[in-house]
Image 1 (spheres, rainbow, N blue to C red):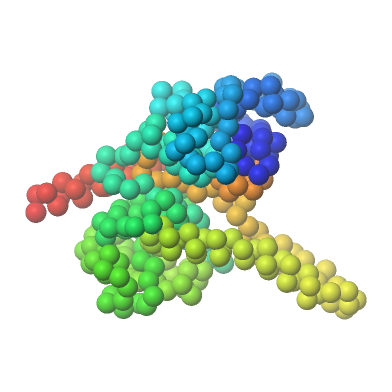
Image 2 (image 1 turned 135 degrees about the horizontal axis):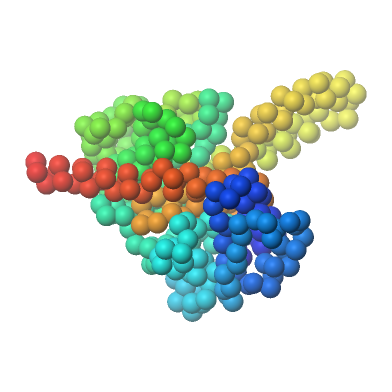
Length: 332
């Protein structure tokens, strides 16, 4: 029920995911049953799809405090969805609603994977060579060195499992390439990463984020969130600037028409809808947090991303990796 265009876009995206899934998974819509049913009625042959509805009478609005809302709205759709996952009735939750509420309800209902101190939100930054996974992008503002290391481990596993990267290049976002740069936490994290099993390629600067130098970029939540919001603004600014520069001149319009396939490809590369949502890594379950303005296409891709995480056993691999590191450190 959450999101700028909910529940219409969520229902539409879920239906499309069920269609492309061809029975591979079941879509469970959680929210006000009559409202969801009314939007489902706009789609043809939904009775043939693997779809069901779980009624939830309340929803958390974007302006509400997550903790207060979760305390006072026990039948909120996000809490009901997480409870279904806790009971094993669903395997994952996709939400385009209140990010704080999704995070808080996931931690409250599902807890953390053994070995994880701080779950982190990761987001994909597209570029010409593919995508780079940036984590954390808002869950943790103050991070210890080992937290940053754990973000790297989780990002490494995510890129291997979901994007097929055999040996992802992992980097640390900093103000310079030298290992002596940055605050104490970042400098200590550099040393931990350098000694780890990860394919650590050192520090990376902001200007290198979109050139494909790294597959995983580690940052604390404050810095990561600023980078993410800046990147999100690029697509809109690019389109508006392009239209303004083309103007009404006939030769400019002819040139733009001839280059339209190229412009469309560029727009596709940098369009967040292509990449689903941001995984909340480190919780003892699976939660994908979509953009508040998620379209049906974005929701559909988020569901496909979620199914991949389930099939590739991302959480099990994170637990194995981090528990192994913990046991090794105790032995030393």
